[in-house]
Amino acid sequence: MFFLVCRHGGCYIFHQRNKILPGHGLGDSTDWERILRRFLVFQMIVCPRDNHVRLISQHDHARAAGTIARNWIGIESLPSPPDELREKVLFAIDNHDVGWCRSDATPRWDEMTKLPYSFFGITADKAVEIWSEGIDSCASFHPFSGCLVSLHFSSLAAGGRRGAPFEVSKVLNGFIHAESKRQEKLDALIEPRHKGTIENSVSLLRVCDTLSLLACRAPEITPPDDDVHPLTQSGLKVKTANTDDLEISPWPFSEDSIKLRMPGLLLPGECFANEKELAEALPLSEPIVFSSVLRRLSKYAETDSPQD
Image (cartoon, rainbow, N blue to C red; front, top):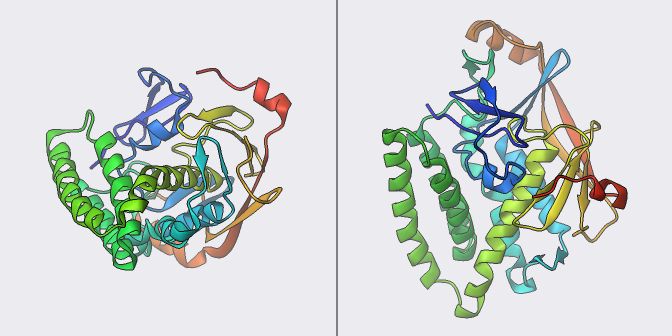
């Protein structure tokens, strides 16, 4: 199984599944994007709330990231993609997690958390299989799309192998090596005039992915409500609110606010004693559409943000 360090903000470190330790050793712990790259896997996004558990599939979270990208007009540090590549970039962002669809279809019980498996309960072999399937799907649409997703997951794998057990590192190194070869083949199919936009497009994928995870309230990366933190690689500052909304500065979107809608399930109960109890609760779950609104961050809130 994977072990992650992923609680941001210097508050906690989740280590060896869900054992909580004091938050030390993260360096600049406000850099969410660096912490996000330490995530090795995503299964369903599992968010415990009062008397119920919210479940959102990875692909539905990715589609929310696509909505963010469609409204992105850019900031100086991260402009919008050129018109001729827009469709290819959006396809990659929409579908980068499509490989998780079969895995997300049937939630499984996690003995450690007493909840459905979330970020922590999958082997390295299964993770790279799922990543590869998503890359295959995007590359079949266009080499540029496949290249973006390959680079994105290679970055996650590179971050995840640091400090990982030998066998995990071996699998991730194999994935990175295989994707490097794939990237060479895809690069040869991309028009030379478009190659200079690859890095920016991968950054846009990463930022939209991060914002969508925060909007879905993935507990492994979501900071305390009302805290303002920088996404340093993009130049954005983000504040989470207890209404599930996000406040962002500088404002990179075409509209005054962006409403995200993520289909999911509302699972009754706070925890489940065993696999059977979870299986009995699943038919009682209610389909629901979760929402999150992205708004401008007030100037007053910006002045209270943590410093790098």
